[in-house]
Image 1 (cartoon, one colour):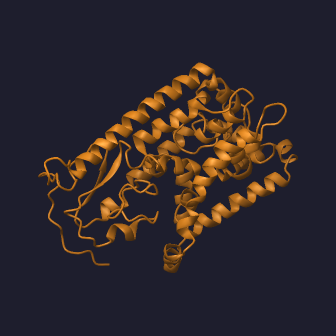
Image 2 (cartoon, rainbow over the protein chains, first blue to last red):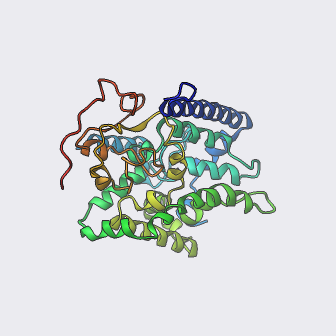
Length: 58
Length: 303
């Protein structure tokens, strides 16, 4: 293999690690933004009452 | 019982630990409902102690205050990043229900062959991505009226998990609720019946073609922490893995397929032990062959 060209396996692993890092940051940021905006309360209110749409009534 | 089936039952019971709710026809209203479980489990199921991630996304988008659900989508990204579609294979009660339905009766072998060869089967798998984009993300926002409230479109018009696991027990226990049944319920009940019939004929029919949550987690399969790995040097291309895969995946060709639910049937079947799975087992990679994965290929698989 050429000295200048990285092995495909290593490139693949590097790409995966980078994607994981990016999505980890996105996941944490999204959860914190959602928590800050009060979305958790909206989820709770919806989930703690019978969802008529889910059953097929409303 | 198979270890995967035990985990599936434990997950289903854990998500639906409010057992008295089934008898009383009432849902759990505790603070745990603020959190989402990773699998598809309707929050209006009387047993549910937490929220369904798809329901949570739609509830927030359809509400008057928000246009997007950062919280629920963030949780889904986190689950997907860790497990990918392992969640479908191990941690989804509706997946368990589908497997039990499928195992409940014998099918002629031509059923599986017909599904594999049908030209419509592959494009039909794209339906779940359309449902994810349109019914889960777009319609709850686009249907907002003057009051600023939209419809949780997937829950309202499609979700068979809600119809079966929430509608079934709640309607059975509440006569007043039954009086409200109409055209919408007829539509949802029809979809639920089609899903049940589909599951009898095809392994995990809903997961393959209709589940938006599986579609979302499938996007993470190629770089999730939990992955399937193929040792290309050990693989004999015998096709044993593809022949046992209920999801129609060929792990020897695409171990990162978004359709793979990480059930592990291919790992057990491979006669050359070329497939491995786990969180950080790097051993079985081509060109980085180590002693732990240098397993000599066995004889070719014969059916």
